[in-house]
Image (cartoon, rainbow, N blue to C red):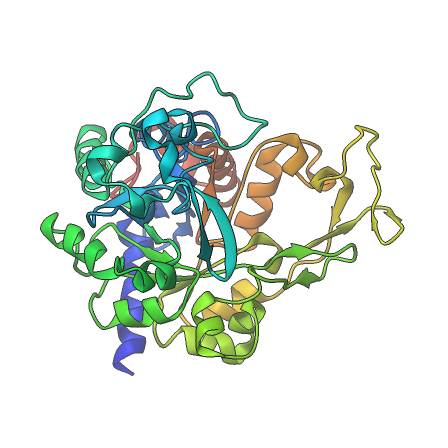
Length: 409
């Protein structure tokens, strides 16, 4: 029962203390919940190389409430922001001759992975690297310009930006491959809490969520912090009919693989699974199809056909299916729901959205999610404004007059 009260308190703090959290209404009218915009890999990562102070800064300028650093460890135990321990796709390391001998193959979550690993570099060496854009459809004009930041640098930066902007800006770190890091003697959890404690952010009410795709490390963190924890939920793919596919290594939390636990990620979102998650976490971060999946508009040979004639098969060749009841079931247990990842490129937008990113955000906002992970914070914020204008008759006045009450810009 004590855990239930704590979780309810965290939910209330997240909704009432985060900016923006509640659209203003004069009492006694009920408030309209404003979903958080979480800057995925920074929130400006749709425009700039991800996990750089520059991408975080742009995300904040575009209106992100939280910025998300993915965390991996260096050889000397510092936490840095990279999407994976392997630096080959997100930095210029492969172009630097002084590090050529560092290239090797490791088993990462049971899969051989070849490249350059953060755990083979000291922080001083990491600072010689520069970030690059890993996604081919995005611009590369800023490749090689921006440093790789540490968690401590990001915390200091976010605090400064929050003060400059006069609004609460938070941090949403993810512990990447925690079982792997623990196996090489570089466990992430206490290192993360140590940085947050030194910054005065390891307490209930601090502007921090901690997330992970694994479960054991979240259970450990639950014994060490009152910060809200979020269980991420993945899958490998969606089939032609819209059913989630669970193939290794994206079939289950890797700590389940190591411990021999049966099941897959989807089991975390069954009634029993959600009840279990609620014993150690305060929210879920599901892949979007768990909330509303998609099916091939036209099936050819058991796979999606290119219905729009652009010569490629992608999300634009799929159609929305009816939504599930996941949001309602999670909320019934006091769990927040923060789905991922929202992106604005046409190939990533289901045909129902007609190429308009706002249509996707609006649909998920209407389904009741508490926040969204976005590479393009500007699109998420613009859609949120439309959502509030539609659902809160007082919000137009708030938007125009700038007098939005506590927590409003």
